[in-house]
Every structure is written in structure tokens, then in C-alpha cells.
Length: 324
Ligand SMILES: C=C1C[C@]23C[C@@]1(O)CC[C@H]2[C@@]12CC[C@H](O)[C@@](C)(C(=O)O1)[C@H]2[C@@H]3C(=O)O
Ligand SMILES: O=C(O)CCC(=O)C(=O)O
Ligand SMILES: [Fe+2]
Image (cartoon, rainbow, N blue to C red):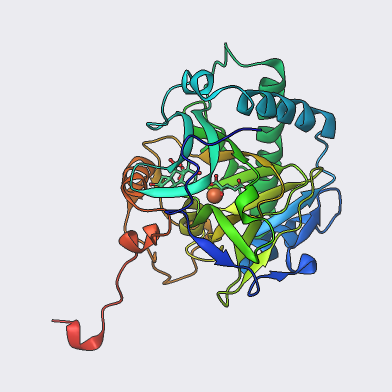
């Protein structure tokens, strides 16, 4: 078993579990082979900012091969894992998330997806390529469901060779001290993802929770054969607030070892993030100030995990008394 270098739980918040609803029909499930998939994807992005996709065509054996490599990596000694370098911003990290004081009950490996992945294992190369194809398909379904052309208007932003993709392997170890208590330990604190979309796959352990529009938290039942898609802050802006960047977190139960792998799809650094003109109604104004992905990313990396990062870029409504 992996022992985290500083196993003290003092700084990691414990969460009482009773308020969380296990609500599997709450999470929209979209079968990508169904003719109504485009409309269902849009509905899910508007209501939840989150969806599970099935019938995606990626073999479960590929996911399991990569998962086995992740498990092998995380079972190395701390000294060996630390050879992958500290996560500033890419490398191996343990308990500390980001550079601004956030902590969680996890260890992880984070890296920028290289356009020429020379040192990747075959499982990693195949997995990243397969998930890119899946993301492209989901983003094109969004455009179809929104009835906008060209169909690659969103996918094109993140499939460019200069796009800013990040891949992350997370391991939430069991926590024996917690067993028998009705508490969950914060694995990854609540946050939204800054990118366009994130494509997540985990082993069959619980822990992921999403926040609904009314502020309540629901547990997402694990499914190792499916993928989960998060709408990120950038997609909320591209749709001028029509899609919802989903607030999510991971609460570790203490019993299971959770392994997740997430591909975050960001645009090229110089790309302007602004509502798509095809989506703007007559007289409709952007809810956000103009910014590039580079500007947003820099601001995001200065923020704490739970901060409302998009708030900094929202246009403040000018009331009548404030007008000159
Ligand atoms: C606390 C932080 C960790 C994070 C950078 C940040 O300052 C705020 C956003 C965080 C997040 C969430 C989604 C991804 O896991 C991530 C890699 C990203 O792009 O933004 C993480 C950042 C991180 O862990 O470094
Ligand atoms: O590990 C998970 O299941 C989710 C982690 C997450 O939200 C993230 O890395 O941004
Ligand atoms: Fe996330």
C-alpha cells in the first residue's frame, strides 16, 4: 500500500456524508450511438454541465492497461515517484494541489500532452489518441445539438496541434484511520475545471460528486467502462453561459483505492475565449470580458481550488444609478 509522505489529516477537511444524495438517474447517460445523442448532450450540458457517455467505442481493455500502468507507478517508493519531479506545474504531486495552499487525500501525476509523444508507453499513446477522438465526437455533437456550423467550431479549438492539453492520473489511497466513521475525507476539493471539456475515466470506486444547480451535491456512481465529461469554464464562456461549468469534487471513503485518469482539453494559449458568434441572438451581449486562454490560465493558476475563477472575467451589470 502506498503511504503518503505526510499522512496527518489535520489540514484536509472531513465532510459529513449525510447531505450527499446517491442519485444515479440524476446523472445524464448518453449512448453515443443513438440518433438523439446531439440533443441529449446539449440538454445535459445546460442542466448539469456533466454527462456520462456509453457506447463510445473505446475498448475497456485499453483503459485497464493504462490503469495498470498507473497502479504500478503509484506503488513505487516515494523516492522513485519523486524522480518525476515536483508538480510545478507538471510532475508528481502528493497532497498538495496547485501552488496556493490546497490539499487533498491524493497523489497524482500531471503532464502537458505533447504533440510528439516520444517517451509515452503504447497504452498511454493509444489511450490519449482514443480519448481525443471521443472528445472531438462529443464536441461535434454539441455543435450539432446547438445547430451551429461549422460542426468543428468547438472541437477545432482543442484539436489544433498547439492546443493546450493536460493529462492527469490521480490516486486516492485508502485511509484506514477513517474507517467506521461517517465522514468522507476531501480527496480533491470542490472546483470547476478551467478548460473547455475534461474527459474522465475511473476505476470502479466511488468518490466523484457533482453539484447541481440548486447547490446540492450528488454522488456519481462509478462505471469503469464509461467516460464522464465535465463542461469547463471556457465552454461556459464560448456558449455565453448556456452551458454550465460543473462544480465537482472527490470525497474519499477511506476503504477503496480510487484511480482516475483525466484528459483536460484546452485551446492554444493565444486563442481568444469569447461567446461563439453563431450562438449570439440579435442584440445579445457577451456576459464576459474578452480574454485569451493564456490570460485565463494564468489567473486560474493564481487562484485557490474553490474560487469562482470566472467571476473575475464576468461583466458587472451596470445599474441605472451607476450610469453617467
Ligand atoms: C488550485 C489549483 C490547482 C489547479 C490550478 C489551481 O490554481 C486552480 C485550478 C486547478 C485545476 C483544476 C483542473 C485540473 O485538475 C488542473 C490541472 C487545472 O488545469 O486546473 C488543476 C490545477 C492543478 O492541479 O495544478
Ligand atoms: O479524480 C477525479 O475523479 C476528479 C479529479 C478532478 O476533478 C481533477 O483532477 O480536476
Ligand atoms: Fe476537476
